[in-house]
Amino acid sequence: EPILRKMIEMDPADPTNYYYLANVHEQSGNYEEAEKLLMKAREVKPNDPTVYTTLAGFYNRQGSFEKTMEALEARAEKEPNNPEAHHMIATFYWEKAQKDFTIPQTERLKYARAGMQAVDKALQLNPDYTDALVYKGLLLRSQALLEKDPKVQQDLVKQAEGYQKRAIEARNKQRAAGAE
Image (cartoon, rainbow, N blue to C red; front, side, top):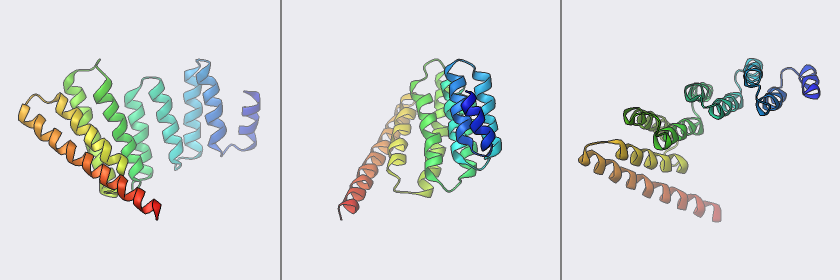
């Protein structure tokens, strides 16, 4: 810790040392100090997307989903034209909708739909973004599992299959381009 504090003193505008020191505190259970250090990193580099993904990772490990999503949304605001920023939001919503059985089904459905909006934004920015195509299909399947109407379920699964095919085509196209 003293070495990291000295490094911060030497270059207070570099968020990396704040991350390392925050990790030391997090590993020793001092979560309040870890969060303060990550906030300080955000203060010194407010336009650095890594600050927000690091903060989101911290909050996610603490089980604070809302704060995780706030940090990821802030990152996407800093990089509105980066499809990966929106895709990352979608992956967190998918995981919450798909795997958190402690919340009501209606809330899980809400998260699946929020993930859908995020992945749609990623696909708007890059229609051939393979990972986003995959997650669009996963989100559609998650939504199908949470819907009560069988007709809606079937429609969602059919849409998911279409995105799965698009993802395979995009991946094959990328591989073919890489082979040239």
